[in-house]
Figure (spheres, rainbow, N blue to C red):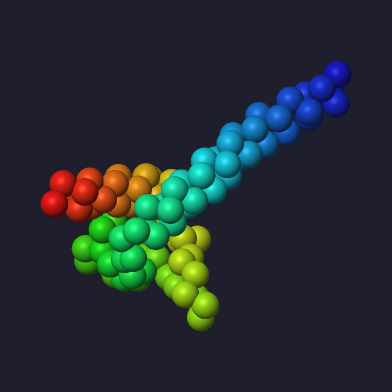
Length: 92
């Protein structure tokens, strides 16, 4: 009986964490794909999230973007902003 309770607790914790990781990876992949055409710098991408904080997205020495300091909400906002920019450029 106790093992079922422990197993239930582990499942209740592990499943949401698992899905959040999948969602996070998907968002980061989509952001990188959108940015391939736009070629925005890490500073420009950071300013799309928060104009007062240009250091939310980092680039390592290889130029690879690092999104480790962003919450899911920030990633969603960045994806939305990049989509808007891409749509505006497509109209022109």
